[in-house]
Image (cartoon, rainbow, N blue to C red; front, top):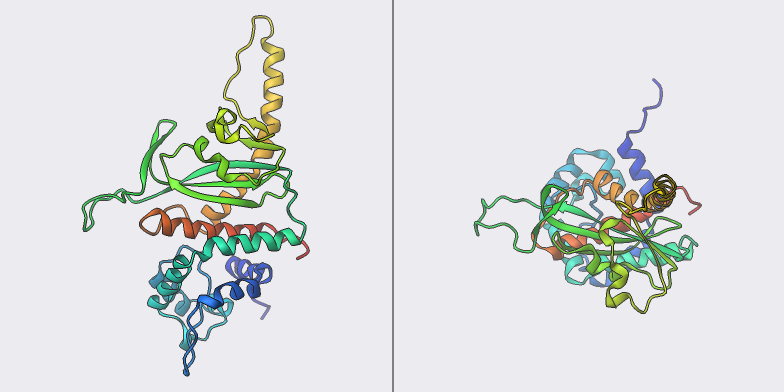
Length: 297
């Protein structure tokens, strides 16, 4: 019989095994992680498929590919409680943002950041709207917002992306109703010459937190106003400018696609912004590593 064709999951995990700087991440977590007793402790390993803690445990029992990636034997698989405690440890000591910064520094040492420009954007992550719970209410830290003619309930993931590499350099989680313009200053690297954004950021340069910045803001526009007799020439120039902006701004969508489609983070799993923002840092850390998988690494 011929050799078995590897599944997409196997290929994905093989690539991630090569690009993740395991030693760097383990060294950062080790001071906070409980030391194993005489009988040996159960190992910790990443979860980026959107599994709940119990589902992660069951998936490891059922899937040999996941066990091989986690380097764990079936008799030493961590139970759901161990996974829960490890996640709480990451949250308690603020390790998810620290790991994100460590990987940024690691990629910077590989020459993958140019820092000449940034792209800022946000996407809505849905939250359950059901009130069938103990408190008979929706998550008080989530909020409703309107996009176009559609109403959404949940949180927003705001990111800043490097225009040259497409890598994410800043992450921020807020309730869905928070205006993109009001948090744009948290998404800049500092020192960039140009910033690209969609029409939701119009007027951002007029806000006081940006007065000191020498930045050329490239904001997309929905429409233009032209004088009679100049319609055709003005429209052509407008379309050319907007197409140029869109071609660069599209890089920010790559990171969102990986987090939402590759990792399945379309809906929040936990209650409150703190836990879900911690997960955002983890996912965008992995998204950055996935985006550089084809580089000499």
